[in-house]
Length: 284
Length: 151
Image (tube, each protein chain N blue to C red):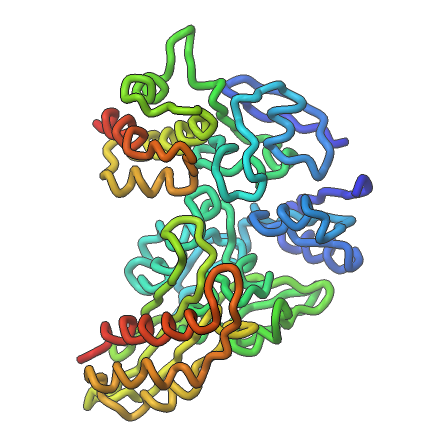
């Protein structure tokens, strides 16, 4: 560990160049709220730490046409405080503000929350439900991938050597769309979620659900699309009966495990009841 | 070792640090500022809270090299010319200090809030210290102390 080198590139090009010429013992340092714990506990042995936390090209939030574009190193706090996010995508504020604590939110970044690949990351289900597209860059190359396709498995994501996530492109909600998020933790602050869930519904003119995107966190090895529930909701009007039945249907989409935060059985009960509560807001 | 310079409690300091050294360890071990407490070392307890460029952060989750060129305030920087900061005095007046271990972090979290927002609501006060654990569970007095400073 004594041969660790800290590198702070001055711009994105320099960061990508450093990333491409170093080896697999190069780790990206963004908010540091996860990686510094792994470093201290000896779970990772980096040779190079590449600090991207202050690269202006990948920080901040701006509207580009029908998208809100979030720089990958945007912090939870910046999202929570952003007037444009509060106005256009308040559901993301709700996800960001419930993560960890003020001290963590001011450092932790959206890309960090994603690339660690945790099944219980607080902001991933909402970004997924909103059909976010990621911009990924390596030296001289840039690609886009849907967040749905980026998550490959437990703590596995679609990032090649030399690549980093540079932006999150989130489609703005249209007048006939609505989205929201719920987190269930054992306490309010600093709780790693027991589970969390996010929903985005698109309504047809007759108020039936034209399409549904539902994402569950903490009930499988990765965050997952609740495909059975999505199919169940599609074509239906959001009535109390439909919402209550949705609480049962969603169980087909979950394969929870038991851990220190909850038993598998407990997670199912929570998933069912909280999904009902979340969908109640969509009754029209 | 890397050389860094930063503003610490309104004074410019220069320090040589190891790349993996945390801000917390640098403050305590190299600069002898042991008012910043070491609790869980993973961002759960808030005992190590300091103010970095106006924001409360866990100093156990920031590398020392990352504060190069920045401004850091620790509990030692609050008293001026022998006078306690009003937040420190309020904590004493309201009986908010029991064992005292969480208090430097509590005070810096509330200072970060009050510097930005001199008139916070009770909910904003409680949110501002939600990353600071008090195992004596003296939260009510702590909130009272901060509330007594609301303008």
